Image 1: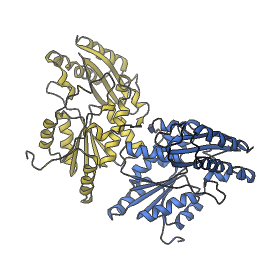
Image 2: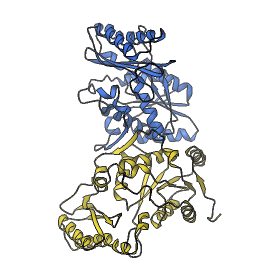
Image 3: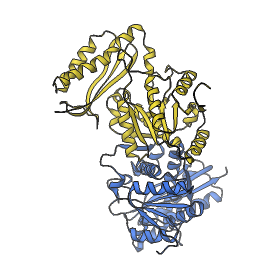
Image 4: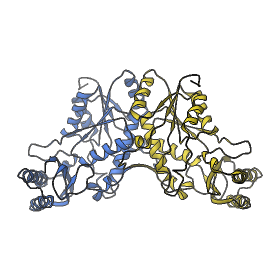
Amino acid sequence: MEGEEQMKIFNKISELRDYVKERRKESKSIALVPTMGYLHQGHLTLMKKAKEDTDIVIASIFVNPTQFGPTEDYEAYPRDLERDVNLAKEVGVDIMFAPETEEIYLKDELTTVTVDSLNERLCGASRPGHFDGVCTIVSKLFNILNPDQAYFGQKDAQQVLIIKKMVDDLNFDIEIVTVPIVREEDGLAMSSRNKYLNKEERKAALVLYSSLKLAKKLIASGERNANLIKEEMISLINQEDLAEIDYVKIVKQSNLEEINEIEGQILIALAVYIGQTRLIDNLMLEVEK
Amino acid sequence: MEGEEQMKIFNKISELRDYVKERRKESKSIALVPTMGYLHQGHLTLMKKAKEDTDIVIASIFVNPTQFGPTEDYEAYPRDLERDVNLAKEVGVDIMFAPETEEIYLKDELTTVTVDSLNERLCGASRPGHFDGVCTIVSKLFNILNPDQAYFGQKDAQQVLIIKKMVDDLNFDIEIVTVPIVREEDGLAMSSRNKYLNKEERKAALVLYSSLKLAKKLIASGERNANLIKEEMISLINQEDLAEIDYVKIVKQSNLEEINEIEGQILIALAVYIGQTRLIDNLMLEVEK
């Protein structure tokens, strides 16, 4: 085996569940890192952190069809299980759960978990049903594994806020741990979808982070007008020919509602098409009045 | 103490959770009997069955506001915790969980669990949102207690089918156990709402069970036309002045869709107002063609 210890791979819910129950009897703490695979440094950072915190790290690799819209990239989404297995081994993942779609979804699935209103804002407006798909698959994974902790990347800021709300509301006995955005050397936020970018687009994609840095600079210099900051960001992004804005928003972290004045715990979030590829990035700040 | 062993009463989620975790470490099996209190023989039968099957029986008493419509009887719903405590002790319940509303629902609850299409049929048509409220509170209780089994009465046939579907779809690791309808000597299905009936209404309420017995007799005699059976039931109920039909339906158990021909696993379900009180009853049958 390539890792220090043998990593176990499971495809079947019942086998994984039995195995985890045995480990739990040994009073092992259990962490879940849910992913859609095609792992990058962002995922691996989550897994390393989970390994520091807990005895047994389970990484799931499942490209969840219900969080993709009909015109989105479910079929094209990059997949490479062998590569993922090797990367996960290297960072000390103990168990990989890589089920087929049919193992996770019954033919006539009828149940949905919804976090109202939060699911319609930001990415939810451009991707209707996306966060219901996320909440439902995450609920399923939580119920299958019953982990003590679950790890999510801050890059999906809205996802993190929605899942935390779901955990509170439905009384899941699970701690949600987040890890800051991991970036390429030039600042591009790591994403499995960066693979779609050609050389020109890869360069153009920097505009997302540049616009966030601009916002940060404006706030640091004392600017508190959210609309003015958004306009500056939009104007910067529009200078890039390959970029087409989906949204640029400045919201309260607690409810994702847009604000006029920068104050308190805020989230600056944006989604921008670079060519055909939709990329997201964000910045969370605590700002004094 | 009045029971053989001491029954513990919890009001706080965290205290109950800690206590149950300790018991689980002793490899005890745990059953949940969720109720809205004002216990009758139906509930007590569930609790006795749970006690036969498992080490520790937890009965919850919680009148769940989110499963009542705005014009329904949430405020008036009968409550008598002291009486419930004594009855539960007598049948060997180990733990009673009787939280305040504020302990269960955060101020800004946003999450809902929905079982699509099943939640709109039968009682769902007259009580919009009712089954979403049920699924959400049951999910919360499941996550708080993580029981091995949960017990539900067959009187709420649609509720049982919906919860079983939710458990399958969301991969809850919980066995749903059902217990047949418990009836008064004259045939009236036990219900906390029977308390609302005055003497005349109590007598009139027998018409629900009479109509089910009529349906059963017709099917036994070879009748397979569902509409004809329904008409006979409706005609019988309408002879009772105090009765006003909400619905009378004959459906497939699997999807709750109405059928024309009696065959296979069927559910005959009805809801009838007796005066101001809405009562339900049902009959599940497996019928050969």
